[in-house]
Figure (cartoon, rainbow, N blue to C red):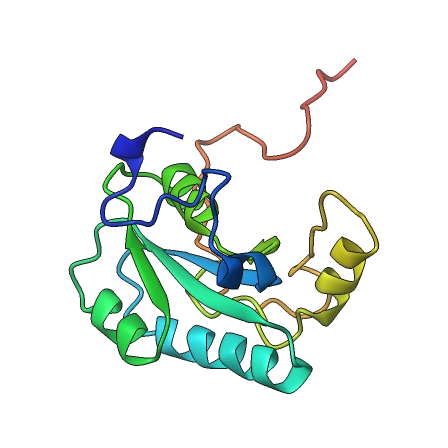
Length: 166
């Protein structure tokens, strides 16, 4: 991880993590770009999960250049914020993961489309030794704001190949 990727973040990718970090089990990571309207609800749900489950953890916001007050909202609710100046969702995730202090990192968008209060099943699988655990927010009902609209050019298809008529 390039130091240029992170601005003001702790150098957590080195082996010398402090004792408090070594005892922290979970980082709940939220990549963020202008999510002031929803990030507060996400942080509240994540903090409630940590408190109610007794899990030692942190809420970490990897901010990607927000200009709408997202950082102030996150900090006012007790989240740790790292600024990731390199633009892009992948860069925000990479910067956040590099700064995470927990043994495990669970991430979800800061747009309130994920249930940060229901992380127990993910943590159970990670504790059991799974390297990667993925959720599916498309099972059941999809909230109207849960995903961005996908615009496709006429004749294009998403997720399947078009077969020529015989």
